[in-house]
Image (tube, rainbow, N blue to C red; front, side, top):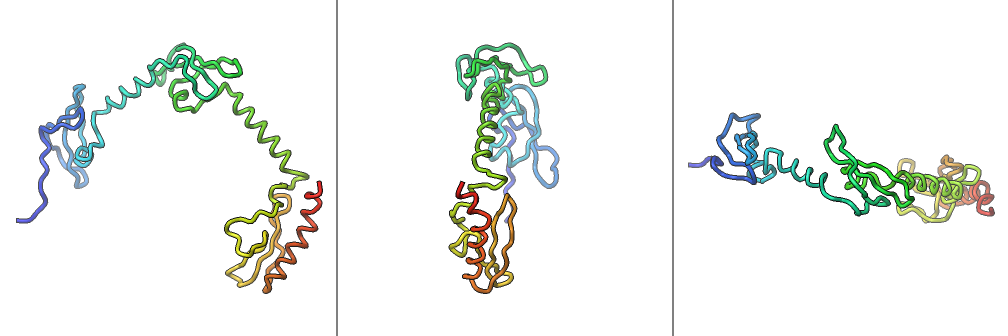
Length: 215
């Protein structure tokens, strides 16, 4: 006689969980009441048990997190920070706060989870340096509002013409010419002949880009 095989998990163990009994179905899915070794009970869906997605009432995750948060990190490096000593706890999260010494010699207090996840890697000097570098790069790459990098002759991978600023427009069936001037794209027109589109682009480069290339 056909039919689905009934899975009886009562008495079986999955990690720290022992199945006590099957409970009422929810949305057509089977659930079991399980008892954890820590003494707590938890209702868990059948597939989560069979695939071992759940191994405790939640205490195992909590213990692992506690081990990480209470681990001795003294002398260990996290980016530019070296952990020195525990100076207290975060009352809301109940996890340790470490005093760290930055490579720039500044002391900073960091919550352990932000330290171990590398969310915090310096006293703030790293971000400051990155901001300054970005400003220098912007000053270097821009002249009178024109990005010098964008006027080089490098072709993008999706280029269809072999010439920068010229592409085939499928909608019109013509060749489109355009150029970027001071961070704004300027349309040069649609051309039936590819060579006319290239000519328009080269003339625009002579007008808009050449003055910057010569600087």
